[in-house]
Image 1 (tube, rainbow, N blue to C red):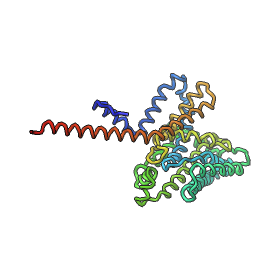
Image 2: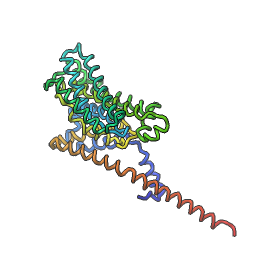
Image 3: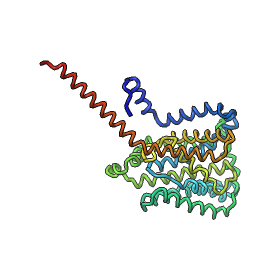
Image 4: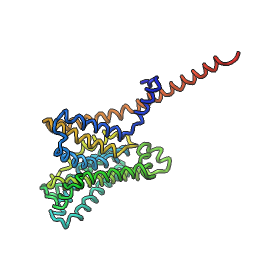
Length: 351
């Protein structure tokens, strides 16, 4: 790989490399929306958008949690169990009664955070790999969901249903929940000292330890934060569906990982952007809607999500090699400039 020799082309290449990931994924999402009517007429109708935004918002909330874990070099497979547990608790505890709704929401969110804490403890202090730890926690949670629900779904409290499915100034409430979640996490990670330490730990744990930062604390915070995000997403999903299935979170595992990959967060850990992840969630939801509008089967969605994740994993594998080539090219350019300067001085030197 060689850098462009033309100065203008080189400046353009540098500008592209510096383009924020969030801007790139949102530009890609905008392009998808522009071509969607050409692929499937009517996919941008008011009714289609009204059905699109709530699911995109719920996916974005859950994907925020996965982003935090991925930034610490992990992967969280407990998404289905945590979301299903939150949905079952908020419906079963309230039992359709508005008077019990507040306590049901609190219990659901606390239980989700506790599930994240369990995964975090297994990974950080017991030394279990993230894949094994979160998969085991997910299995336990799904068993707990089966026990609490007795195998039968329960209808959500009317107040939760009317709130989540409502609109404010024409904007779905689900979007009004997702936007603050994304913005708050963005501010905490990008604009606070603790957040910068969090990203530094994910990018280089060894250097972070040498600098006196707690790697275990950062990883534990990631899993607890992820549990909270999944819990909020599960509660919102339960209200939106009104009578959610007991394993309602099962369909969210691949999409949340795909949204993180689309958002450009490195699967090796380090810097990431939840705003870009939200863009990835919107892109993925719209893509699924276009595919279904064309009459394709649901399995096509899973294939696309798998391809996106595979491409992301491939990018992770080739990224170090790409960085090596860029470094080598830069060194070659510098050496060439120095040799050229030396030759010029030799020619101009008096005899």
